[in-house]
Image 1: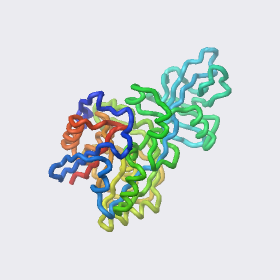
Image 2: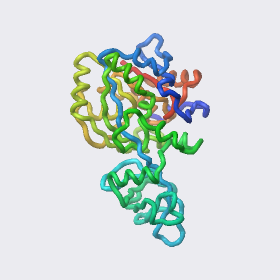
Image 3: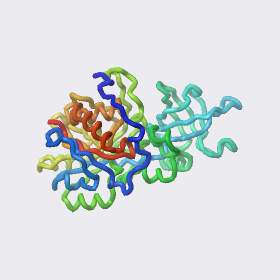
Image 4: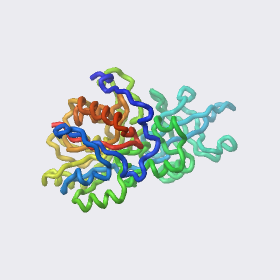
Length: 360
C-alpha cells in the first residue's frame, strides 16, 4: 500500500505537551463502524459506562527507563565530540541497541562516556563501547554495568526519552518522571511509554472493578523505533524493529475464558494489541508468549485477539495510524481524525484517547 494513503494535515496546536490533569479528565472519542453515529465524544472518565460486565482490559505493564544519554566519544585523541544516544532494545548482559546522533562520528571500538561530570572527569560517568554499527544511526553498545547496576546508572545519568514532537518544543523536566509512566508500570525496560495507559487512574480502576471489568497485564518493552518515520513509499518496503514481549500462561487462560463466556477483550494501546496478535493462534486462541515481535498491521490484516482498542491519536504516515486504520477501517479513521482536529482533541503521547471498535 502507498504510505501517502496514511497522510493527513495536523496543526501544531493539536500536539499535547503535557497530559490532562487529572489524567482521566482527557477526552475520549468512540469510533464504532457499526454505530449510529459512528463517532461519539466522551470524557475518559466515562470509559466504565462504555464497557460491559465480563469484559477484559489488557494493559502493558512495562516501565519506562531514562533511556536518553548525553555524553562524549572517548579513546581517539583529545577531540571528544558530543554524542547523544537513545537506547531501544535490551540485548542482555549490559548490551543495548541504540540510536546515536551524530552516528557518523562513531565507529566500532569507540568508547563513550555519559554523565553531567564527563567534562571534568570522564571516569566518573557511565561508560560504554560501540560493539557494532548498523544502518540508520543504530549502534550496539556494551556498558560497563548490567542488570540492576546499569538500571541504577541510567536513573543517575539518563533522561526520560520524550518523543521528538515533545522534546523539540520543551526540555524534559522532573514532572515527566511521573507523567510519562502509567499506573501499571512495574517491569523496567521500555524506552517509550505505552501511552494509552497514561489515562488510567486508581479511581477509574476502582470503578471498572465494581462494574465487573477485569484487568490483565502483558509486557511489551516499547522501543524508540516506534517514533521513527516511515521513509519508504510502499508499506511492503518498511522494516519494523523488534520489541521483546511476554504473555503469561495465567493471562492467556484468563483471556481465553473471557472469550468463552462472551466477554470482549479490550487492548489498552497498540503495544498490547501487537503482543496479543503475536500470541494468538489462527482460530483466535491466545497462547503464552515470550520473545521478540516485529508484527506489522496494515489494512487487510485479520485481527484475531481483540474486540476493541483503546489508543491515543497518532502521527500521520506512521505504522500506528496504519494499525488503527486496519482495525476500524481507513475511511472511518480519516473521518475520526478530521473530527478530532476540528473539535480540539489533543494528539500524541500526552494527548486524548479513542476507543476503537473492530471493523466487521
